[in-house]
Image 1 (cartoon, one colour):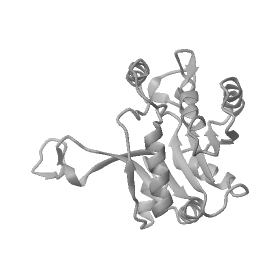
Image 2: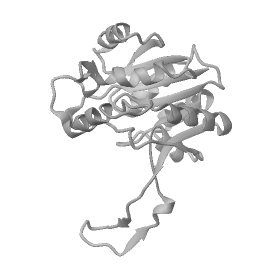
Image 3: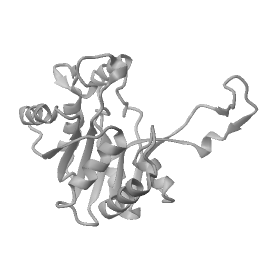
Image 4: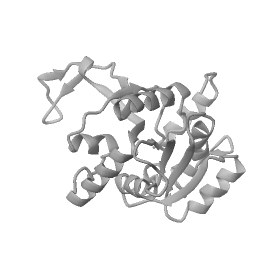
Length: 235
């Protein structure tokens, strides 16, 4: 079984809005629904489970019914941080998942989930046990210790931009988050499943990413998303 675990527990403080950014409407449809539709319409996804901001669970379920997201089977209350929300989601799947099931973790505020990205992350995970969508970095990257000067750089061939979707076997996720929570490993600011796995000494495998897979965190990102919706491409 392949399960999508969509993380939609953020507040969206940087957008200075009265509602969480994942519930902001674009062309009369909430951002989170665009995200869920990507998984709903992809035939290799068997179920969707969402982790939602406390108090917004019923809102999300109502939107899912309105827009025909029939694969959404549960909405779990999120935690104080992204990692806490992912932890809650993973633990909630204990009664549903077998060890070899593939869990695709994705940010609810990345609303353009293209089929080839999902296909590759699932395929790579099926082969190696995990997969992290990634893109080459095309700019030059210099290191600095004071924010003013630099005298060394990183070869861009050695660097990848990683994001979600990420996929892992459930057995590994359950082991990793249980261990990390008990030993306080990988639950720091800006951490995510990929960084937690790396902190635990795991080797990660890279899958295909997309420049369209933008993360909506500011008002400018909303404008970019609208522009992408107005272009012609196959999801």
